[in-house]
Structures are given as C-alpha cells and as structure tokens.
Length: 98
Image 1 (cartoon, rainbow, N blue to C red):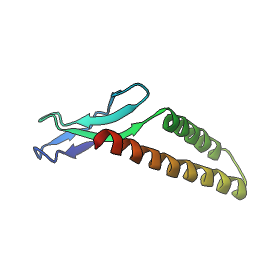
Image 2: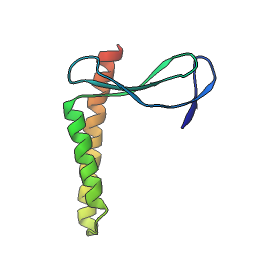
Image 3: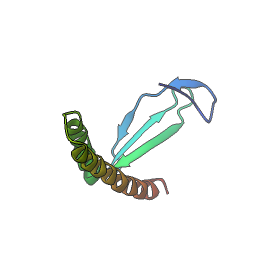
Image 4: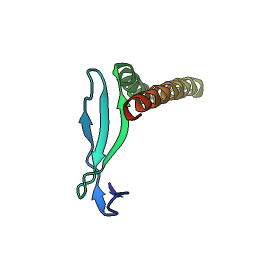
C-alpha cells in the first residue's frame, strides 16, 4: 500500500516495522523511505496481544456454520474485545507519545 508523506509529500510504500521501547510494549510503525518521517500505527502490551489472538480465534469460529443467535453472540464478544483494546491502545499512545 502506498501513502503520501505529510512531510516531504512523496508517495512511498508502507513497510510495517516493530520496536520495543520498553520490555513488554511493542510499537508498530512505518517510516517514509524518502525523508524518514516516522508514523506510529499503534502500541500493544501483553494484554492487548492476548485480546488480538482471542479476536482472531473468534473470527475463525464465525467462518463455521452457526445459528444467527450464536453468530450474534460471537460478534458481540468481538466488538467488546475491540472496544476494550481501543481504550488500552489509546492509553499506551498517550503514555509513549505524550
């Protein structure tokens, strides 16, 4: 996927990178290949990564035939996990990006 850099205005291909600023915290980001501007996508901790794994597992269950009620329960659980993850990710962003 190509994006335009806010700094140099040149299009570049996004190549996701990972940094561990402190033990247990992962910073997911990409940089402009022309000027080096860093764009932070998101931060995760152990709890967020556990929720991401659980969400992937729940999505795989959705691909198997289920009743509408079962599907709704799975989707509700997925949405609740996503909402909880967003809160945690926002907290991490405010801590590590100031």
